[in-house]
Amino acid sequence: MMSLTLREISKELKNIDFGMLSTKGTDGTISSRPMSNNGDVEYDGDSWFFCYNQSRKIDDIKTDPDVGLTYTARPSLLGKPGIFIAIQGVASLVEDKEIFRIHWISELERWFPQGIDTPGLMLIKVRASQLSYWDGDDTGTITLLGSS
Image 1: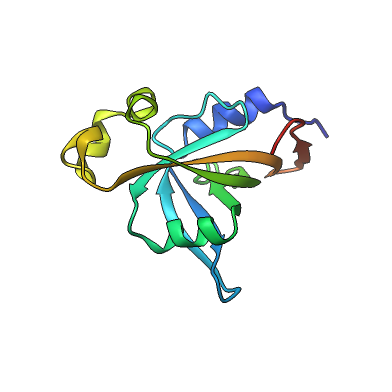
Image 2: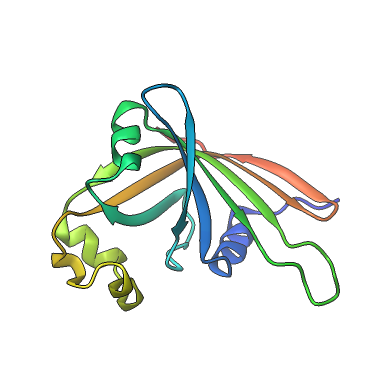
């Protein structure tokens, strides 16, 4: 059994556009919803997601910033299951247009038609504290130091 590195997992994440973001609500319930990573996965422990500021996920993060991200790759043509990745982290909310520019890609205009000037646009930054993966017989967990 071989352990994957953070760089190898980043490469896998580049090929998985959508994952699930899980948050805890004020009533303690867990909610999950699909979010696009926009290919923004030069993975150093941070994940970035654009959204509107008037959504339940924003209220959830303000109440409890501990979140989970999960990703699953499609099976290969040979029938091997794809990789499964689970990330635990802490979310923060960003409203800085300069940071928007850094993470913006034109494909986002499907959801945010005025680009970084879309009213109510917000960026969720998730700083990973732990990442677990399952890839056939290869499984492992990476704890990221300096996470907060």
